[in-house]
View (cartoon, rainbow, N blue to C red):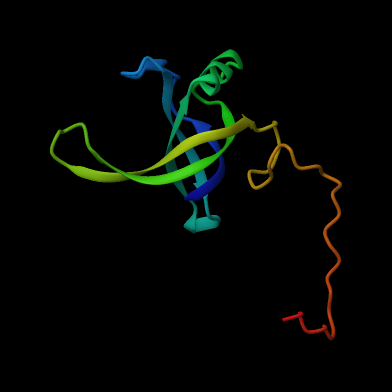
Length: 132
């Protein structure tokens, strides 16, 4: 199972729905900016949330334009477009964790990462063989 962590902006207002098994759920697109300079482009991920995660998203006021980091399992899902004929694929994220991206924070960093965590020292030179 692929795991994804990304940051982006919510592209629509959240619309609470209920499954056939009477479980509340949400599905909303998030736009993530990928690449740099002239190769930069926007990638859209369909985020799905159920149960308690739904209540948390709504109670925290997530809506269109909210800057979020999201993480969860990733699937490539086939779907039929609105025309009812054309088939396509989209990225579907089953939400496991999320949070707001603090203003001014770089997109690559997770909100829970401390700013002063030292990087490990680079080891160079001869190394002992690993035990067999």
